[in-house]
Length: 290
Image 1 (cartoon, rainbow, N blue to C red):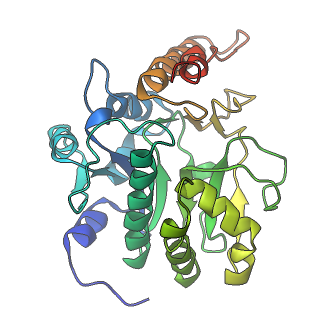
Image 2: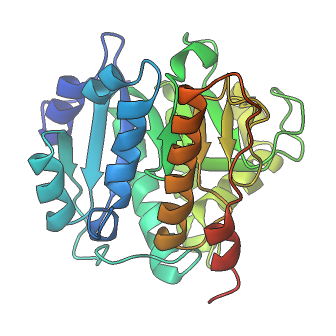
């Protein structure tokens, strides 16, 4: 890989990264920073309330898709980068699987490809992921694993590509020639994949053998540690992240993630009583009201 010349992105990455050039990246637009309790605020609450997570904000880069979200990010004194969107409107809420949603996901993929080409490893996290514990102890932190990616439901085989319901809302990836080639191949499918979100395209490429052809070593993360609404963690005493997946709207995610925060506070207050996650009613109802 050729070293990148100093540019705005390089400056933002260098300022935010750890010593081994790893950055935590989240992407927001106006819909995620407005309202009585914006999604971005809930996301940050996780870092405040989680175990050994507060210092991780020092390595969190918020990628803003519009001026409002960038201004909010700067107001919160976070590390911020304004995404260049080439005149495309990424301002409002993009409902799951709408055309605007799919376009925004592909723009995100292109940006993250650029991060890899700058030579930075990263954890990408959606802002509807609560970090309740520092996830790094549950991630393999060396160059032997190219990508470690969350799944909607864990099938019991962290190294097998078969039938893995991968979720691109949380993953860790190392920057190398293999992963850059993977992301280039992934983004190249954009115009041949109408009606598919970028996650579905990555699944298809994996099933077609692209990971093996590139020599990509992938680990699929157990929902015991990296959970979501599709499949709750079985043990609150070890879970690192909770993702509001299997959910259609921001308002539903906000409702149910707020319940997760209440569950977490209840657990921290008394860890001897039996624990059960609150039902994700908002997200279940979000599929009924289209």
